[in-house]
Image (cartoon, rainbow over all chains, first blue to last red; front, side, top):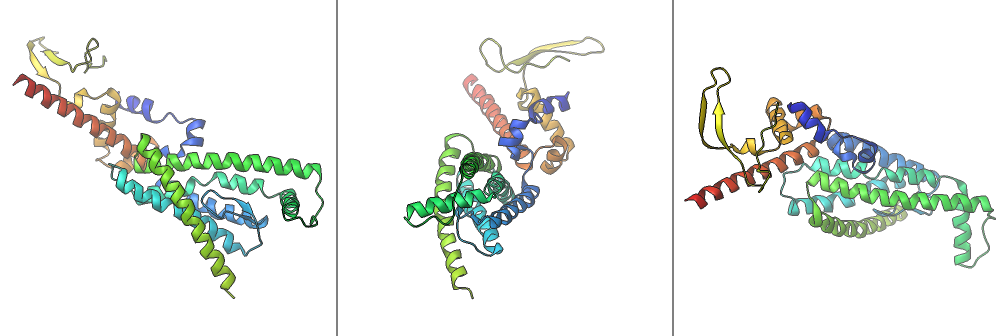
Length: 216
Length: 99
């Protein structure tokens, strides 16, 4: 009796759950290892197309930099959100939760940006962005673009937008599950945490760029 | 086997036990007995608690057994704890009202 009773309630694993709340099934150290691997691979892929993850929710094509720079950006983004949410958890949650669950689930929540980094890989994106930039600062275009480039770029932008929305949804679920917070308290503290994390990560990126420029 | 109802289907109040019967000799005892707090939980929650005890109270073991993450299992336990507390409070309130 008991096993069936538990199973009906707790193992309704389906695709929707795995996509939007994988933390029901995976958390802790496993999630941390997997999440860190995904963050580093995303940074590595980003380095091929100079795609920078220069903020918790940011993805921009920019200047060339050494590979470590792209890897560190991803790690900064992760920790800048995990720490404020952990602190909010300590204040708001009535449960005793584990630090490793907050760190692990927040790392894994960044996995949609791996897809976004892949979408930014084609050179067409860089050509269109260089063209748009030249138009913006009113200089001669660095390279000509064709309709196929625009199509690829348009597709990449849609993918990046969808992946950002998905990532935020995963970040929220990660916070709610790992700290056991529900309802309005969860939504409000998550929004405040996310805004704070975005600001902190931007400041951390500024320090990173400064350290990079100063380094010999 | 039939599921023991804990809540009245008409007014949603807690149900009490009126009679108990010996399966072997059919001796029947009648009275008014309160259901213990654990018996007032849903079948799912009771099943969870039994498995939790069988896993020596280890949430890690439970997570492995149910193929769920540790925080999911811990959150479920926290929910059950809340329900047990509520059941005990309502029991206490009921007794105070009688007095």
